[in-house]
Length: 467
Picture 1 (cartoon, rainbow, N blue to C red):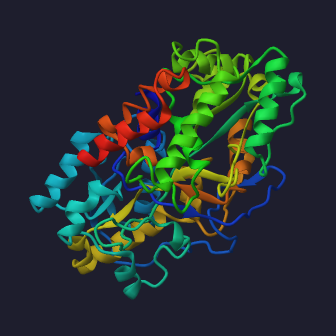
Picture 2: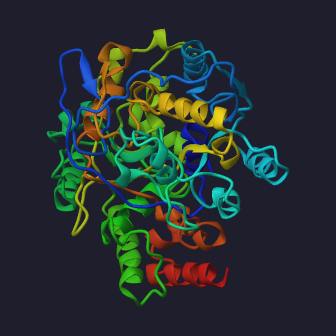
């Protein structure tokens, strides 16, 4: 399905392995003229990595990452590798490839056959479990026993632990978020202010009615095609960052009732006429066009959509210089209306990939220093700023970047992320497969009342627990 494919192929951060974790951050960062802070995901500090540490020259590192093919950071990776090679006199044998099941299987096979990479940029969830269980990679804490400054620029609370043993192995670079885009031209026409950090569900409903009364569609969404984002946040609104990733044991327990309540909220939005008239038959592309063409006000989507929105305003989709900046300036991104224990600034997002150092490289004295140096360079504040851009990172300090290098929507995304209070993984990535059919594919029947939300949730949970 399009949305799931986009969030994996664009950032390789949501493999659907069922390992998403809650990631909290404190507010911080400030916008300076012509410079802006990238998502801090932690308290502001002043830690920046220093120069590349001294080491023996002539070391060859075997490195495997997903920064290849059409990945937006493929060139950034090549540039960074070249810089590190020049600074150290060492070389990188790059075996990077596009992230897919074939790539994942190849990595696992390399470990099984003794062809372990020295450094690996890979998923930190269930996909990594086999080589972690076999002791093929070294933990961050182990590395810090010898190199205390290793990943010291990262907020440890935001580094995802392995589901195998709860230990942290992978140093993250970039992640993803899901939030609410707004067409400010529509909002202005309806007399509605751009939502802020304290946006509530009640205020959202009032705004939707104003937008509808003004002759516009409040919410751009194709419930019969891509109901995922509304499913996720509607359920999140009846949970909290601490409980959202708990799959209900049954429809009757507290979490099960939260799921039912969330679906009933979507039904209420549908009954109020806040979705497009053809929301049950339209494609996601069609409702997205409503948003970019100024016919709909709100769109919940992911960080990968920043590029898609900019592309919609380019006369040549392949040429950023053809961007109609006046149209793009009318789009902003903000928080999703909150309810109960979930603040609007509590978003869905995460950091589900990172750099590993293999045990083989760690036990090789020459490669050990080179591998540590390489990861430190690739995860330095400067490099993370390039790779993460307007997405998520685990940096303690917010590196300042040249605002002129980004379009207006990217800048607004950075501003928005500086106020995020937590990032929680998507429960749909745990509740995946056939168990989602009754509530995802069955959304049209739920909102029209053909199927009760309670029955749809019951069916999905029964399938999930039977798997």
